[in-house]
Length: 146
Image (cartoon, rainbow, N blue to C red; front, side, top):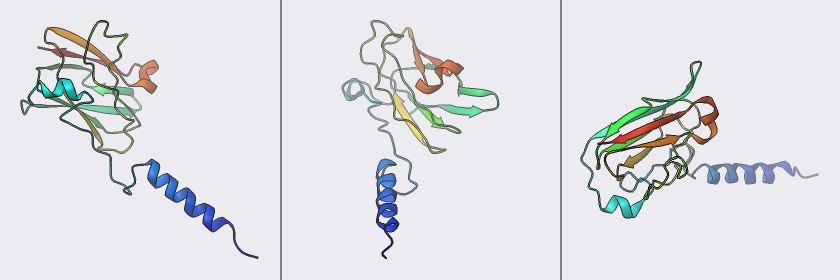
């Protein structure tokens, strides 16, 4: 009798690798230039300033650190996963009347994985963002564009 589990195991491994980006252990990289919005990014040149925001889940809870950010158009806000599984989402209904909001990031799953957003939002306002699965736990923040 032939063992039928080997083909199914192989198929499952291939499906898992494909679903995780296809490059065993490599974290998918985000497009720092577009931040999810190519048309807005084309009009804003990066300044070279990078603001790091950690995405954390630990005994203190799920949070962005810092959760209050000040930036200028062209600055890059680099959301870096430290622990947990998180995303970054600038919701349209929480930023009423704002055009060119960045698309929600993918779920970051590997420690050190990043999502870069080149600030292309209008100055003089504060914009709300959140981690979709952890907003009930208070994982939200504000980006003030100077």
